[in-house]
Length: 292
Image 1 (spheres, rainbow, N blue to C red):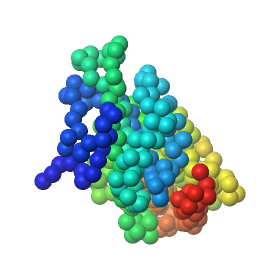
Image 2: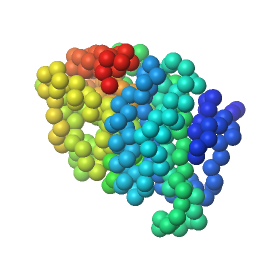
Image 3: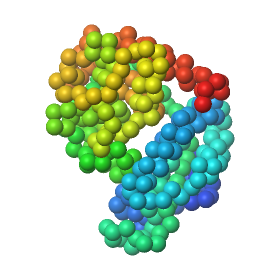
Image 4: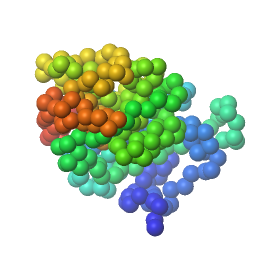
């Protein structure tokens, strides 16, 4: 079995290569310490979706780990467009990763080091239609992650353990609880709907500032739908009329069972249908070049 993804080309440190030829030193701090950050950017009709937002988040993550962005905006765009072109006119996503680079193993940051820059594009795998029609199941789990979840760091072992806990429970996601309050999912942001109002926790150190999360709030406000950011207690999850998860690759996905109990009426609700329609309209307008 070939352990490598079936990709025509990847980008590594200034070169475009077949995946099998892309090599990184075992002394790279990304490998040794998980010392790096990443981004995932959707691409529709060859256009990079919300690129400015993604690159701003990348810049913030790099700033927080005291690493200078190794590429300008124009240089990033040149890399992305080359990767997009080899996949053709399909919906796809860009994965990019920046680590601190290769240095002798020492917890303290090396004084002179060249960052390792890696990126690739691959076709988007959307959630199956039946998940949108019937919703997914989730569990709650204690939030065992560190206290800087706002940094999009490559060190995702805690997230992977939490997601595996959900998979082993026969569900698709874990909704994380810290000190009695919901934070987010192991790989998503979470929205609660109660009495027609859309609610999601405010940004802070325990929550990744999701690009899709922000767009959902923008669309709700633009179309007169009540939505706000506030802390959400764990018990509110069980009395919610609707629950959703959002991410760049899963978009807006309804959660209809939580800890083996139905959410609301146990099926996707009307506000989800409305926001999903608005999101798809916006995405189509972006693909057509009618919005940026």
